[in-house]
Image (cartoon, rainbow, N blue to C red; front, top):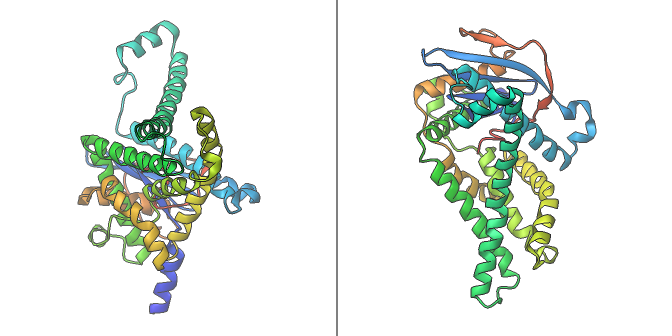
Length: 345
């Protein structure tokens, strides 16, 4: 009996992943994803859709290292889509949330202009991220090097990496003070607890999920932290020690896919093994999850469990809940290989 239980646990590990969304949780199995959202009425709204990972269509995209970059892109696309689903479910009215400037643009140029604004906003957001996590660490390190009389040498890259990690941790700590973000982090904790409950072979109930930890080694937070730590080592190589800031930036961006690939392979391995090396390398990410997750309440756990059961209809055929919606057409461009949390860090 114990052998059967262990075998079931082994098969379940890594078979499902997810992320927190607005007032809910998204869970993804190998062939579908499900978004469960708590409505103001107290009901749980569930939207389920089938999905086909690109690696299932093109085998080369499932090769080591390549699969990490592909999975990262698919995860970003799926994250955006599921956030939209959750926003619609809780009744976020686009027009009601428009600024006066956005309303003026829509009235003057039509609704199409808002798509242009969205693209510009996205580009601005990406640009801000690059400035914050790439240019700012370089500028700060350059200032420290100048104060030290230009004597930092190869240590400069190490300091730059530490500054980058410090900025990331500080940013997460600040946004976690916002009530809405804090609530999202609670759903993040609910996602982890329910996945742990499922992977352990326990019956998937709120009471059982409460007993499990909210810190998961396969979390997107761990993925980001591991990438940052690896970048400190990689960018300390002589090829990245250019004095020209633009050239250094371009070189680092060129090697970014390699960091993504290495981070993915580590998270994938860490989710299936629990040896000493994995525990040591996973520690920084687990520590960081103290910021990106919060202890969920029972209602949040109920939402996470509903999402998980809906994503696995073969295992939970009797699970039913009101207001379920199943999209008819499968999606072939946003499938991702499951991880505990690949977009919500």
